[in-house]
Image (cartoon, rainbow, N blue to C red; front, side, top):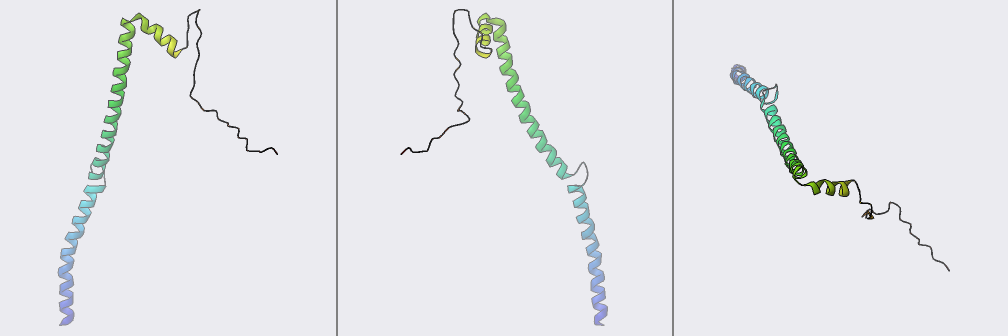
Length: 115
């Protein structure tokens, strides 16, 4: 009689277990597999936020460049200023000195002592 009770208990639990397995498989399928899964939605939202920040960056650059273009259209001295600053152009009667903050790549250290 004891074996019969054990077998009936196992049968009763296996009926419940198959529902648990099917539910876990369904959750895994919806959550992680396929193009419309929760996981892919989270990745897509992250990518959208990265692209939105990139769009904002480029919009800022666009506005800055448009401001420079408007200034070039309206101010004739702006062309001269850009030519002198960016391309080192000069008038005939002036000299240009380019100053650099670069550190020399090789520094000679003399640690020898003379006796």
